[in-house]
Image (cartoon, helix red, strand yellow):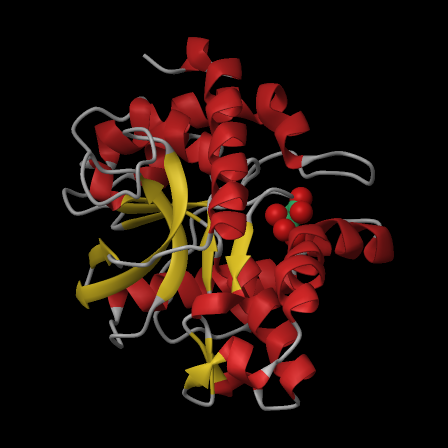
Amino acid sequence: MELEDCAFPLVRRILRTSSADEAFAGANWGLLVGAVPRREGMERRDLLRINGGIFTTQGQAIAANAADDVRVLVVGNPCNTNCLIAAANAPGVPRERWFAMTMLDENRGRSQLAARARVAVEEVRDLAIWGNHSSTQFPDAYHATISGRPAPEVIRDEDWLQEDFVRIVQQRGAEIIKARGQSSAASAANAVIDTVRRIAQPTGELFSAAVPAPLRGGYDVPDGLVFGYPLRAAAPGQVEIVQGIEHEPWAQAKIDRTRDELLEEREAVKDLIP
Ligand code: LMR
């Protein structure tokens, strides 16, 4: 009912169905939001065994029914590894069509940097989220810009940028659950819209999403792991990982930590990956 009440100009028909085959028939975009949400005290990876199975059948249904140009954004948690499962179960859908959502973390981080620098949020750009959408993610303030200047030149507080800022963004999902008794809803939905826009309507700006790591240009992340990167859309739907970013050893250690967590998650669901 509320979808109807939004009067979205592009909505032609709303189909309610419990059949994944029917839901994905002819779909150009699949937004995989359906999953058991996290509760207070849980980490997202605690949902692996609960939710992982859902994504095998969704991947199969997408491969069998969606349009030839389908693109998929996985939101249900743990979204990186759920995306890995769905993509592995969708033979024939090229790997560059798969995304897991880290835009919510980017938006959270941009708001935090803006508040700290006392500027409007649109002044904060180029904030990449590396790795897992989890409490190990690495939001990289060092390559972000504020009003066109490197963020560390504007916020001259290394401890805050390297530790507090990272922790605030990593823990924001848990803070929302504590405050609301439920996981984020409006900000997550908003981040879905932001992600699809960035992919479908390129602005040339850097944005964050997790994608299957490529053989080359994936910053040494093992092939196929769904890893958060700084991305840029060169043309509608054509997304590239931004190359040439160098990290200080402390930052690289955080990236290694989130990569290792994703490897552990992959190991835990290896029976769901054909
Ligand atoms: C979020 O980051 O708010 C969502 O992914 C929900 C969660 O479990 O944290």
